[in-house]
Image (cartoon, rainbow, N blue to C red):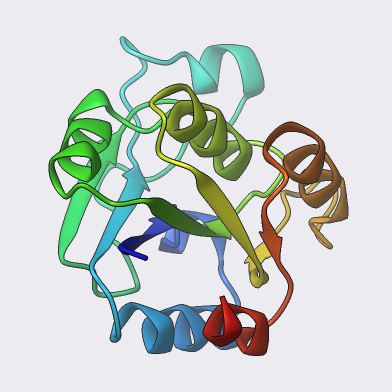
Length: 157
């Protein structure tokens, strides 16, 4: 099965744990990968006005990826979806930060594009609302089905 890895918002503004960065980097080394980085532009997405918070202006992906896409807001950019379509992948493995917001939003965008998203549970962390990520995992399973719990399941699949 042709797969690609999507790394969602593993950047300094979200203070990812080191184990997450290292774990994602290990998986990314073995397959095609793309990453998103959230950047602040109040004219595009009103984070500061509505939420009193904003991501950094110059954050970079803390995990090396084949391509990095800058986004403003929760959804991945259309150019990233087009890139993955062009790769003709059968499944997109998704991991990163904020399982219940940005990771879930990426899942919806991938699903709507017919790109069969699968969540890598052991490499996904929740938002400040639910740091365990369990809410996001439950929503992911409900909407998309495919949740891979550990590296052994990934190798078996």
